[in-house]
Image (cartoon, rainbow, N blue to C red; front, side, top):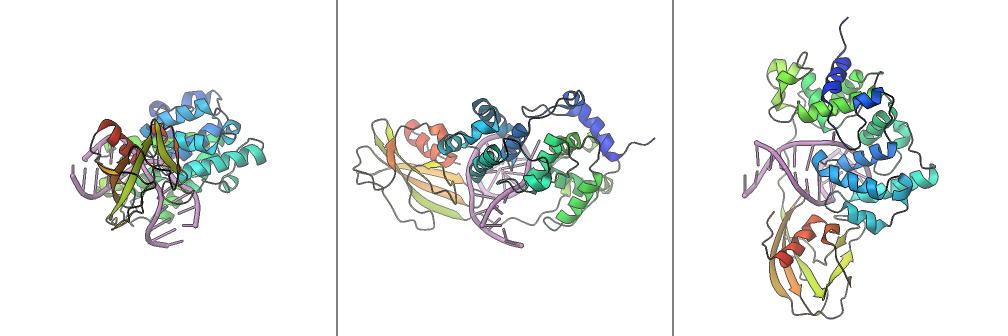
Length: 345
DNA sequence: TAGACGTGGTT
DNA sequence: TAACCAAGTCT
């Protein structure tokens, strides 16, 4: 009897599953071990638009510090934002806390086990709802992330550029999702996309789906999925102010909405074509150099101004600083003056 | 609905 | 070096 495509992939996964701190591997899963929904949810939030390599240490740190969703829900906002610093997309951390508090306080500490209910929680969209339902609760939910878009567009030779191809891709993904072992299947497709069906130089010779992959057959696997061209990033400039009093630094918390929202920060001017200087205290400001940083949609060049004996600040407050709790752009500025390097991106 | 929203590794 | 890419969500 011929095995279905899902079964072929599950066989491949049984031998090739990657080991990850939040994952219950196929062998343990077969013995009946169940994943912890809290850990699956946390890993999925961290993994949004973020590589496994970048997430690993943060995940271990978070779960050591906050082993259960109730622990995370009880944490101070600033503690969690500081622990998230460096991972990026900080709205995820704000929504993470909101979600943990809803689950702890209104759902008795238990995550919902259906896509529809998960989707109602902050920070959980279509992908994450499906991933948690499938991986944590073994529901036959179709996960569609960047890996799956690539795998499906190749397997079924979907040549329509993204995002117009999304309905066809979802259709293909839902059709393939099995009733048996849907959680392992979800992880298997993503492992396939991450290790075999890669964006460039896919290892088609090693692929369990090399037959019947339509794009491989047509010799165009590497060109899929097609995507609309990206827009060029503009350059913005600004001033950043480093004021010290002994071991204390002048710091402020950024507003909850917008770029780097809710994060600890050094005071800056506005960022634009011709920024207006905005020193946060009367002082003898000196030019300490330049920091360059690239965000998702623009390049930033910051003129770093430094002062040692500033007057009373008009914004922020002086406090001890652990630079690890700063977003990367501010960590670069701190490093510039503490290690005397020119910050390049 | 298209744009906002980070970062670090790879090519 | 500049561009591209990675387990998306929100507005």
